[in-house]
Length: 165
Image 1 (cartoon, rainbow, N blue to C red):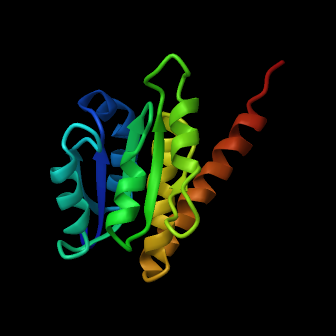
Image 2 (tube, rainbow, N blue to C red):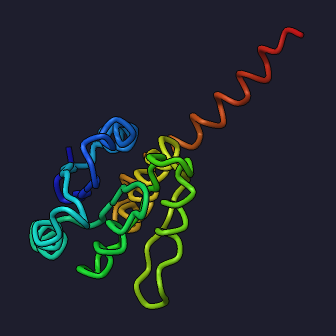
C-alpha cells in the first residue's frame, strides 16, 4: 500500500463501520493507505478535534468523515484542517439519512465539505473521490482510476450483451 497517499476515515459511531467497509475496499483496491477511527463530534469533541488537527502532520492527504443524524462530524473536520474533507451521510434515523445529508451539504460558505450520497454508495464514492484527488499528483493512481472506470464500462456492456429476454 502507498502510505504516501493516506486517507483518514472517521466515523461518529461504531454502528457506522459496516457502511464504511465499501470505502476501505476501494482504498485497498487502489493500494492507498488509510486509517479508520471512531470519534464523535458530540460525545468526544476534544478527541475528535485532536484527530483532525493532527491529520496533516501525520501524513494524511484526504479525510472522509461519516456521520448520522445531525452529522456534525464532517463540518468539525473541515473546521479543524485545510485538508479536503468528504462527508458521508449515514442512514441512522427515522429520516433515513436525509437529516444527515442536509447537515453535511449545508456547510456555510468558506468551510467546504464535499458530500456524497447517503449510505453504502456514498462510502464507495467518497473513497473514489479521495482516489481522484490523490491522482492529481500520481500518474500511477490516475492510470488505475482510468482502468477502474473502464472495468465499470465493460461490466455494463457485458450485462447488455447477456440480455436474454
